[in-house]
Length: 142
Image 1: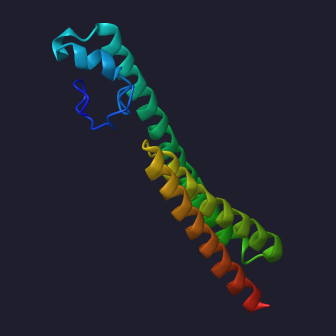
Image 2: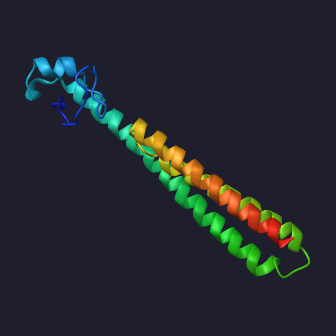
Image 3: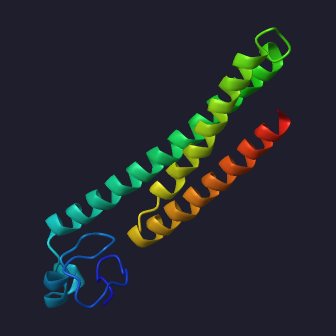
């Protein structure tokens, strides 16, 4: 059944719309114009809360990636050529690992739970692959 308020397709047994949280049993018994304003406000506030949370996660990912990239550039430019090569490489490795793990924030911003789960699984596999290839590369150097 499609929600009469936001037109999102829902399963027939659903009590609330998966997008706007409108009570579907209430919405089906009245025309769209008769939906109580509190229901419209609740649906709008639920959508905006989820949207704000998703936007915050994506913004945190972007900011973290920016600061990580600047830190890596600074370390490579100023400290890799100095006598602190071992500690600099360790810090770069930790930054790389945190950067790889930060990709898990992207699927967390997905609203649909099944798509979020799939995104988390694929992203986790990608991070494991990146970790394996980079660790095998580092061990082949020594």
